[in-house]
Amino acid sequence: MQPVHTEAPDSRRARLSWRLARRATGLGPIVGLVALCVLGTLLNRDFATVDNLMNVLTRTSFIGIIAVGMTFVIISGGIDLSVGSMAALIAGVMIWVMNALATGAAGAVAHGLPPLVIVLAGIVLALVLGAAFGCAHGLLITKGRIEPFIVTLGTLGIFRAVLTWLADGGALTLDNTLSDLYGPVYYASLFGVPVPVWVFLAMAAGGALILNRTAFGRHVQAIGSNEQVARYAAIRVDTVKIVTYALLGVCVGVATVLYVPRLGSATPTTGLLWELEAIASVVVGGTALKGGEGRVLGTVIGAVLLSVIANILNLTSIISVYLNAAVQGVVIIVVAFLQRGRR
Image (tube, rainbow, N blue to C red; front, side, top):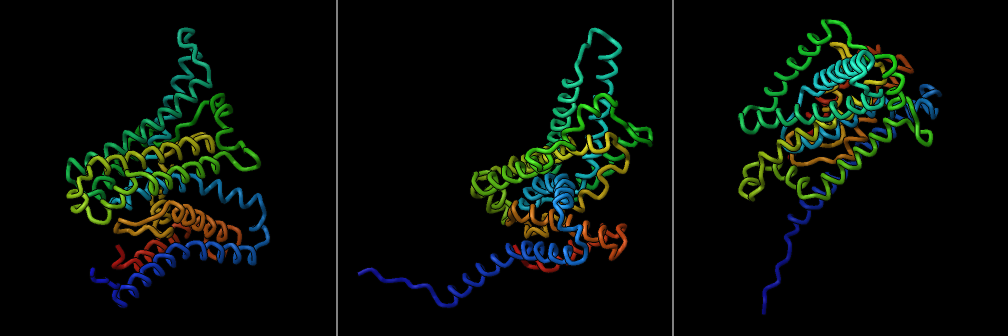
Protein backbone atom coordinates (compact mmCIF):
# COMPACT_ATOMS: atom_id res chain seq x y z
CA MET A 1 0.00 0.00 0.00
CA GLN A 2 1.41 3.35 -1.06
CA PRO A 3 1.79 5.99 1.66
CA VAL A 4 -0.46 9.04 1.34
CA HIS A 5 1.39 12.36 1.46
CA THR A 6 -0.57 15.32 2.78
CA GLU A 7 0.51 18.92 2.62
CA ALA A 8 1.40 20.43 5.97
CA PRO A 9 -0.96 23.15 7.26
CA ASP A 10 1.91 25.65 7.52
CA SER A 11 2.80 25.03 3.88
CA ARG A 12 -0.80 25.55 2.77
CA ARG A 13 -1.06 28.77 4.76
CA ALA A 14 2.20 30.04 3.30
CA ARG A 15 1.04 29.27 -0.24
CA LEU A 16 -2.31 30.95 0.40
CA SER A 17 -0.59 34.02 1.84
CA TRP A 18 1.68 34.21 -1.22
CA ARG A 19 -1.29 34.02 -3.58
CA LEU A 20 -3.17 36.71 -1.68
CA ALA A 21 -0.12 38.98 -1.64
CA ARG A 22 0.39 38.46 -5.38
CA ARG A 23 -3.26 39.26 -6.08
CA ALA A 24 -3.13 42.36 -3.88
CA THR A 25 -0.03 43.53 -5.72
CA GLY A 26 -1.84 43.17 -9.04
CA LEU A 27 -4.97 44.96 -7.85
CA GLY A 28 -3.11 47.82 -6.14
CA PRO A 29 -2.42 49.90 -9.31
CA ILE A 30 -6.02 49.40 -10.53
CA VAL A 31 -7.47 50.55 -7.20
CA GLY A 32 -5.12 53.52 -7.19
CA LEU A 33 -6.08 54.51 -10.73
CA VAL A 34 -9.81 54.32 -9.96
CA ALA A 35 -9.34 56.37 -6.79
CA LEU A 36 -7.37 59.02 -8.70
CA CYS A 37 -10.04 59.24 -11.40
CA VAL A 38 -12.72 59.77 -8.76
CA LEU A 39 -10.58 62.41 -7.04
CA GLY A 40 -9.87 64.18 -10.33
CA THR A 41 -13.57 64.29 -11.19
CA LEU A 42 -14.40 65.77 -7.79
CA LEU A 43 -11.68 68.40 -8.07
CA ASN A 44 -12.41 69.49 -11.64
CA ARG A 45 -15.37 68.59 -13.85
CA ASP A 46 -13.26 68.93 -16.99
CA PHE A 47 -11.25 65.89 -15.91
CA ALA A 48 -14.02 63.41 -16.80
CA THR A 49 -14.58 64.72 -20.34
CA VAL A 50 -13.85 62.54 -23.37
CA ASP A 51 -11.44 65.14 -24.79
CA ASN A 52 -9.40 65.17 -21.60
CA LEU A 53 -9.39 61.36 -21.47
CA MET A 54 -8.07 61.15 -25.03
CA ASN A 55 -5.48 63.80 -24.21
CA VAL A 56 -4.27 61.81 -21.20
CA LEU A 57 -4.07 58.57 -23.19
CA THR A 58 -2.27 60.24 -26.09
CA ARG A 59 0.35 61.74 -23.81
CA THR A 60 0.67 58.39 -22.06
CA SER A 61 1.37 56.55 -25.30
CA PHE A 62 5.00 57.69 -25.71
CA ILE A 63 6.11 56.73 -22.20
CA GLY A 64 3.80 53.70 -22.18
CA ILE A 65 5.38 52.20 -25.29
CA ILE A 66 8.87 52.68 -23.86
CA ALA A 67 7.70 51.27 -20.52
CA VAL A 68 6.52 48.08 -22.25
CA GLY A 69 10.09 47.44 -23.41
CA MET A 70 11.47 48.54 -20.05
CA THR A 71 9.30 45.88 -18.39
CA PHE A 72 11.26 43.11 -20.13
CA VAL A 73 14.60 44.67 -19.17
CA ILE A 74 13.68 45.12 -15.50
CA ILE A 75 12.14 41.65 -15.21
CA SER A 76 15.40 40.21 -16.54
CA GLY A 77 17.27 42.03 -13.77
CA GLY A 78 18.55 44.96 -15.86
CA ILE A 79 17.91 48.68 -16.17
CA ASP A 80 18.22 51.33 -18.89
CA LEU A 81 18.75 54.97 -17.92
CA SER A 82 19.35 56.20 -21.47
CA VAL A 83 15.93 55.83 -23.14
CA GLY A 84 15.13 59.57 -23.04
CA SER A 85 18.48 60.53 -24.55
CA MET A 86 18.18 57.67 -27.04
CA ALA A 87 14.80 58.97 -28.19
CA ALA A 88 16.24 62.47 -28.56
CA LEU A 89 19.14 61.27 -30.72
CA ILE A 90 16.89 59.05 -32.85
CA ALA A 91 14.54 62.00 -33.42
CA GLY A 92 17.44 64.27 -34.36
CA VAL A 93 19.05 61.80 -36.78
CA MET A 94 15.65 60.98 -38.24
CA ILE A 95 14.86 64.65 -38.93
CA TRP A 96 18.36 65.37 -40.24
CA VAL A 97 18.27 62.48 -42.71
CA MET A 98 14.72 63.26 -43.87
CA ASN A 99 15.61 66.90 -44.48
CA ALA A 100 18.74 65.85 -46.39
CA LEU A 101 16.70 63.50 -48.58
CA ALA A 102 14.06 66.18 -49.18
CA THR A 103 16.70 68.76 -50.17
CA GLY A 104 18.40 66.27 -52.47
CA ALA A 105 15.11 65.26 -54.08
CA ALA A 106 14.17 68.89 -54.67
CA GLY A 107 17.60 69.93 -55.91
CA ALA A 108 18.44 67.01 -58.15
CA VAL A 109 16.17 65.27 -60.62
CA ALA A 110 18.24 62.11 -60.24
CA HIS A 111 16.95 61.53 -56.71
CA GLY A 112 13.26 61.86 -57.50
CA LEU A 113 12.19 60.72 -54.03
CA PRO A 114 8.56 61.50 -53.27
CA PRO A 115 7.83 62.90 -49.78
CA LEU A 116 5.96 59.74 -48.72
CA VAL A 117 9.03 57.59 -49.43
CA ILE A 118 11.19 60.00 -47.43
CA VAL A 119 8.81 59.80 -44.45
CA LEU A 120 8.75 56.00 -44.62
CA ALA A 121 12.55 55.94 -44.83
CA GLY A 122 12.71 58.09 -41.71
CA ILE A 123 10.39 55.72 -39.83
CA VAL A 124 12.44 52.66 -40.80
CA LEU A 125 15.62 54.49 -39.81
CA ALA A 126 14.19 55.24 -36.35
CA LEU A 127 13.34 51.58 -35.75
CA VAL A 128 16.74 50.38 -37.00
CA LEU A 129 18.60 52.91 -34.83
CA GLY A 130 16.57 51.90 -31.77
CA ALA A 131 17.33 48.21 -32.32
CA ALA A 132 21.03 48.96 -32.94
CA PHE A 133 21.39 51.06 -29.80
CA GLY A 134 19.61 48.39 -27.77
CA CYS A 135 21.86 45.65 -29.16
CA ALA A 136 24.92 47.75 -28.31
CA HIS A 137 23.70 48.02 -24.72
CA GLY A 138 23.08 44.29 -24.54
CA LEU A 139 26.51 43.42 -25.95
CA LEU A 140 28.34 45.77 -23.58
CA ILE A 141 26.43 44.33 -20.61
CA THR A 142 26.75 40.65 -21.50
CA LYS A 143 30.02 40.37 -23.41
CA GLY A 144 31.75 43.33 -21.77
CA ARG A 145 30.60 42.26 -18.29
CA ILE A 146 29.68 45.85 -17.36
CA GLU A 147 26.80 46.65 -15.05
CA PRO A 148 23.66 47.90 -16.87
CA PHE A 149 23.58 51.01 -14.67
CA ILE A 150 27.09 52.03 -15.79
CA VAL A 151 26.56 51.23 -19.48
CA THR A 152 23.30 53.12 -19.85
CA LEU A 153 24.49 56.01 -17.67
CA GLY A 154 27.40 56.42 -20.06
CA THR A 155 25.31 56.23 -23.22
CA LEU A 156 22.81 58.67 -21.68
CA GLY A 157 25.48 61.36 -21.88
CA ILE A 158 26.78 60.19 -25.26
CA PHE A 159 23.39 60.21 -26.99
CA ARG A 160 22.40 63.68 -25.78
CA ALA A 161 25.85 65.13 -26.51
CA VAL A 162 25.78 63.81 -30.08
CA LEU A 163 22.32 65.32 -30.62
CA THR A 164 23.50 68.67 -29.23
CA TRP A 165 26.45 68.58 -31.63
CA LEU A 166 24.25 67.58 -34.55
CA ALA A 167 21.82 70.44 -33.81
CA ASP A 168 24.71 72.84 -33.10
CA GLY A 169 23.19 73.54 -29.70
CA GLY A 170 19.84 74.53 -31.17
CA ALA A 171 16.98 72.64 -32.77
CA LEU A 172 16.61 70.36 -35.78
CA THR A 173 13.31 71.19 -37.49
CA LEU A 174 11.54 69.00 -40.01
CA ASP A 175 10.87 70.35 -43.51
CA ASN A 176 7.39 71.89 -43.77
CA THR A 177 6.25 69.67 -46.64
CA LEU A 178 7.34 66.53 -44.82
CA SER A 179 5.81 67.83 -41.58
CA ASP A 180 2.40 68.27 -43.21
CA LEU A 181 2.53 64.76 -44.65
CA TYR A 182 3.84 63.22 -41.42
CA GLY A 183 1.46 65.07 -39.07
CA PRO A 184 -1.46 62.59 -39.19
CA VAL A 185 0.73 59.93 -37.53
CA TYR A 186 0.23 61.90 -34.31
CA TYR A 187 -2.87 64.03 -34.93
CA ALA A 188 -5.14 61.62 -36.84
CA SER A 189 -7.79 59.47 -35.14
CA LEU A 190 -9.35 56.11 -35.90
CA PHE A 191 -12.91 55.56 -34.63
CA GLY A 192 -12.45 58.62 -32.44
CA VAL A 193 -9.27 57.31 -30.80
CA PRO A 194 -5.92 58.99 -31.64
CA VAL A 195 -3.43 56.91 -33.62
CA PRO A 196 -0.75 56.94 -30.87
CA VAL A 197 -3.23 55.31 -28.47
CA TRP A 198 -3.93 52.50 -30.94
CA VAL A 199 -0.19 51.93 -31.39
CA PHE A 200 0.27 51.91 -27.61
CA LEU A 201 -2.46 49.31 -27.19
CA ALA A 202 -1.00 47.16 -29.97
CA MET A 203 2.49 47.31 -28.45
CA ALA A 204 1.14 46.47 -25.00
CA ALA A 205 -0.86 43.53 -26.35
CA GLY A 206 2.16 42.24 -28.24
CA GLY A 207 4.39 42.65 -25.18
CA ALA A 208 1.93 40.80 -22.95
CA LEU A 209 1.67 37.98 -25.48
CA ILE A 210 5.46 37.62 -25.71
CA LEU A 211 5.98 37.75 -21.95
CA ASN A 212 3.19 35.35 -20.97
CA ARG A 213 2.83 32.98 -23.93
CA THR A 214 6.31 32.38 -25.33
CA ALA A 215 9.45 30.56 -24.24
CA PHE A 216 11.36 33.83 -24.53
CA GLY A 217 9.08 35.45 -21.95
CA ARG A 218 9.55 32.54 -19.56
CA HIS A 219 13.32 32.75 -20.04
CA VAL A 220 13.28 36.49 -19.24
CA GLN A 221 11.49 35.80 -15.96
CA ALA A 222 13.78 32.87 -15.13
CA ILE A 223 16.90 34.99 -15.64
CA GLY A 224 15.52 37.74 -13.41
CA SER A 225 14.64 35.23 -10.69
CA ASN A 226 18.03 33.52 -10.63
CA GLU A 227 20.50 34.00 -13.46
CA GLN A 228 22.84 31.23 -12.32
CA VAL A 229 20.03 28.67 -12.16
CA ALA A 230 18.88 29.81 -15.59
CA ARG A 231 22.36 29.06 -16.96
CA TYR A 232 22.24 25.60 -15.39
CA ALA A 233 18.88 25.10 -17.12
CA ALA A 234 20.60 25.66 -20.49
CA ILE A 235 18.93 29.02 -21.09
CA ARG A 236 21.02 31.22 -23.38
CA VAL A 237 21.20 34.03 -20.86
CA ASP A 238 23.40 36.43 -22.87
CA THR A 239 21.26 36.10 -25.98
CA VAL A 240 18.03 36.67 -24.05
CA LYS A 241 19.48 39.78 -22.40
CA ILE A 242 20.65 41.21 -25.71
CA VAL A 243 17.19 40.64 -27.20
CA THR A 244 15.49 42.35 -24.25
CA TYR A 245 17.61 45.49 -24.72
CA ALA A 246 17.05 45.37 -28.48
CA LEU A 247 13.30 45.08 -27.85
CA LEU A 248 13.45 48.13 -25.59
CA GLY A 249 15.37 49.99 -28.31
CA VAL A 250 12.66 49.18 -30.86
CA CYS A 251 10.04 50.44 -28.41
CA VAL A 252 11.99 53.69 -28.06
CA GLY A 253 12.10 53.93 -31.87
CA VAL A 254 8.32 53.44 -32.14
CA ALA A 255 7.70 56.09 -29.47
CA THR A 256 10.01 58.49 -31.31
CA VAL A 257 8.20 57.88 -34.61
CA LEU A 258 4.97 58.94 -32.92
CA TYR A 259 6.54 61.88 -31.09
CA VAL A 260 8.38 63.62 -33.95
CA PRO A 261 5.25 64.83 -35.83
CA ARG A 262 3.91 66.34 -32.60
CA LEU A 263 6.41 69.23 -32.61
CA GLY A 264 8.31 68.56 -35.82
CA SER A 265 11.66 69.22 -34.17
CA ALA A 266 14.33 67.78 -31.88
CA THR A 267 16.31 69.75 -29.30
CA PRO A 268 18.85 68.86 -26.58
CA THR A 269 15.92 68.76 -24.12
CA THR A 270 13.81 66.29 -26.13
CA GLY A 271 12.97 63.19 -24.10
CA LEU A 272 14.25 64.73 -20.88
CA LEU A 273 13.40 62.51 -17.87
CA TRP A 274 11.58 59.96 -20.03
CA GLU A 275 13.66 57.27 -18.35
CA LEU A 276 12.31 58.36 -14.97
CA GLU A 277 8.72 58.15 -16.20
CA ALA A 278 9.24 54.78 -17.89
CA ILE A 279 10.85 53.20 -14.84
CA ALA A 280 8.17 54.70 -12.59
CA SER A 281 5.45 53.23 -14.81
CA VAL A 282 7.02 49.78 -14.59
CA VAL A 283 7.51 49.73 -10.81
CA VAL A 284 4.12 51.30 -10.08
CA GLY A 285 2.61 48.57 -12.26
CA GLY A 286 3.93 45.92 -9.88
CA THR A 287 7.14 44.74 -11.56
CA ALA A 288 9.80 43.85 -8.99
CA LEU A 289 12.87 46.09 -9.27
CA LYS A 290 15.03 43.06 -8.39
CA GLY A 291 13.65 41.24 -11.41
CA GLY A 292 11.94 37.92 -11.93
CA GLU A 293 8.33 39.06 -11.79
CA GLY A 294 6.15 41.58 -13.60
CA ARG A 295 3.23 42.13 -15.94
CA VAL A 296 2.82 44.29 -19.03
CA LEU A 297 -0.78 45.04 -18.07
CA GLY A 298 0.46 46.41 -14.76
CA THR A 299 2.93 48.61 -16.62
CA VAL A 300 0.14 50.00 -18.81
CA ILE A 301 -1.94 50.81 -15.73
CA GLY A 302 1.12 52.37 -14.07
CA ALA A 303 1.80 54.60 -17.08
CA VAL A 304 -1.82 55.77 -17.21
CA LEU A 305 -1.84 56.32 -13.44
CA LEU A 306 1.20 58.61 -13.60
CA SER A 307 -0.31 60.55 -16.51
CA VAL A 308 -3.54 60.97 -14.54
CA ILE A 309 -1.55 62.37 -11.60
CA ALA A 310 0.14 64.89 -13.90
CA ASN A 311 -3.19 65.77 -15.51
CA ILE A 312 -4.85 66.37 -12.13
CA LEU A 313 -1.96 68.60 -11.09
CA ASN A 314 -2.29 70.58 -14.33
CA LEU A 315 -6.05 71.02 -13.96
CA THR A 316 -6.19 71.82 -10.26
CA SER A 317 -2.87 73.56 -9.54
CA ILE A 318 -2.66 71.76 -6.18
CA ILE A 319 1.10 72.03 -6.55
CA SER A 320 3.26 73.53 -9.27
CA VAL A 321 3.40 71.59 -12.55
CA TYR A 322 7.19 71.95 -12.31
CA LEU A 323 7.08 69.42 -9.46
CA ASN A 324 5.66 66.60 -11.62
CA ALA A 325 9.08 64.95 -11.84
CA ALA A 326 9.43 65.24 -8.07
CA VAL A 327 6.11 63.43 -7.62
CA GLN A 328 7.28 60.63 -9.92
CA GLY A 329 10.56 60.37 -8.02
CA VAL A 330 8.71 60.05 -4.73
CA VAL A 331 6.50 57.35 -6.26
CA ILE A 332 9.56 55.32 -7.33
CA ILE A 333 11.12 55.57 -3.85
CA VAL A 334 7.88 54.63 -2.07
CA VAL A 335 7.25 51.62 -4.33
CA ALA A 336 10.87 50.49 -3.99
CA PHE A 337 10.50 50.73 -0.20
CA LEU A 338 7.37 48.61 -0.31
CA GLN A 339 9.13 46.04 -2.49
CA ARG A 340 11.93 45.41 0.04
CA GLY A 341 12.86 41.77 0.07
CA ARG A 342 10.43 40.93 -2.77
CA ARG A 343 11.76 38.64 -5.49
